[in-house]
Length: 245
Image: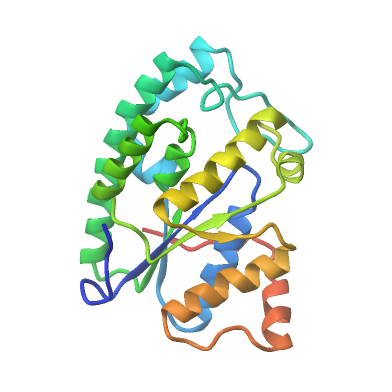
């Protein structure tokens, strides 16, 4: 499902990728750059504002599989056990939960696009980040993905921040490295299946430039072509936050 410019003047984009890919840094930078152009920018966090049945997720990950809670950091790594648990019973649970989240995403996006609270909306993760947990090589699962994508509005830009799994895990140690390699391949396969805008695993500054340029092109604004643009972007340390929607 596509939302075209003729349907709404509000643009919305999403950021996806393996844990530790740098989504928060890129979202903060894009938000700041768009605000410099006078745009009202809002951010929606998928896990906080869209995902449903959170008690079931917590129970399976923590109580059932004895995984850690919280967010991992280089100084305090954790061992999560949720989306990296692959079994048919868990897949069945995920198919149900992801359908519920798809309906929630549809409602949330349509509500945002009908409001007058923002010119540009950034989704920190999207339904893609759930679909990437499925076995996309299975024809039945691919059919399920196509069904979900008919329910969920597709962003004007669906950023997929590709990343080296080893470097990503060093930044955010939460899942086994083997899982991150498999998860990365799943994201890349999903990108081909549903059409995402994949950003190669470049330096932070190079990724910032590509991310911002894609957004500015969508808005028909001048892209980052000067050294001063890069220097302005470098000053942002990732602490800038968009307004919550």
